[in-house]
Amino acid sequence: MLKTLRNALKIEELRGKIFYSFLMLIVVRLGASIPVPGVNIDVFGDIFAQTGGALSMFSAFTGGNFEQLSIFALGVSPYITSSIIVQLLTIAIPKLEELQKEGEDGRKKIAEITRYVTIALALVESTAMSIGFGNRGFFLEGNFNFAGITIAVVSLTAGSAFLMWVGERITEKGVGNGISIILMINILSRIPSEVVALYNQFVKGKAIHMAILALVIIILVILLTVVFVLLLNDGQRKIPVQYAKKMQGRKMVGGQSTHIPLKVNTAGVIPIIFASSLMSFPTVIASFAGKGNGTGVGATILKMLNQQNWFNYKDPLSSVGVIIYIILVVFFAYFYTSITFNPIEVADNMKKQGGFIPGIRPGKPTTEYLTKILNYLIFMGAVGLLFVAFIPMFFNGMFGASVSFGGTSLIIVVGVILETLKQIESQMLVRNYRGFLND
Image (tube, rainbow, N blue to C red):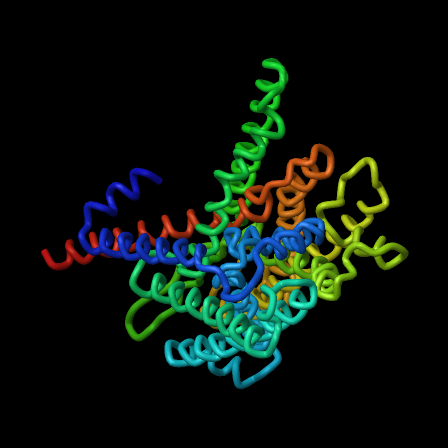
């Protein structure tokens, strides 16, 4: 990684792109210190604590902006959600599917639709948050009125729109996917404070042998999780494909051997994000209504849905939510992969181009073979995602070690770093080829 960056900095064009991305990320972090006008941060801190960690995922993805009520409190979540919604709608709406197949012009129109959906989602989220939390002392005295709510909604929506613009500029003029990089830098910004919290909780003030043991365990858990995430990200099954020779004019073409790379973790972190968001939604709504700490059947169900209560040996009933979580992750893994990879379409394209999988007949048998392999890989990928996600949940439930740089966050961080480095390497390769051709 360091070698790639060092070589990239030697190239003026890439150095400029990296520097541009770095400056834009500084702007993002500076915006974290600008609070929403007219809100009571201390009161919101109490509300946040009362949710029992249900909003911790949102806080982690925004780098603490949500918890600190900055103008970037919504982060890039509205953009990510809108991107997923539009992607899903391309299956249900033929017009969007046609746009997706139109090439560059179609992609630009879809990107424009995604922006509009992002603004709409940001407006809905900021309005719900302002009114819902406003009833619980969210605003400073005298500001809980139409003007105060309007200012808060406009500030939060504008902050989310600005982050979307910054992300697109990084993608266009910098390196890597801008939205993903913003998400990554937000997650990384919380690591120093949480490392200090872990140190104070398990190392500071303890006997020397216990402190050393705790320190070794913490380091080993983090390293093993990172290694497992790397293996999960890079794992793939290569399906061999052979193209038959055929005559085109007076030339014999084809006869090449290639492969179809099927990633083990095809859906990425999407199943985890979808499952976590869906399970935290009832708790968030309850916190808006001021009923997050009630009693009875409803309160018990909310505790089951809250990840902070899982794996707690003192309250085993709350861990029933783990079963729901597993079902949701597996379901979303299959669902998301089914809309991003179509075995029937792949088999048909192979058949049209004279390609076949050795030992498998073209057409329907190829489709069935790809579907069988894909189903196996999706299940293994879902199991891997669950294993990584459960590591921080287990330590939180058993030892109270609540951190945001485990599980889901690590998958995002490692994935973004790997993809950004691959893009830098590809740009370096293109530049070298260009220089070779010019010579």
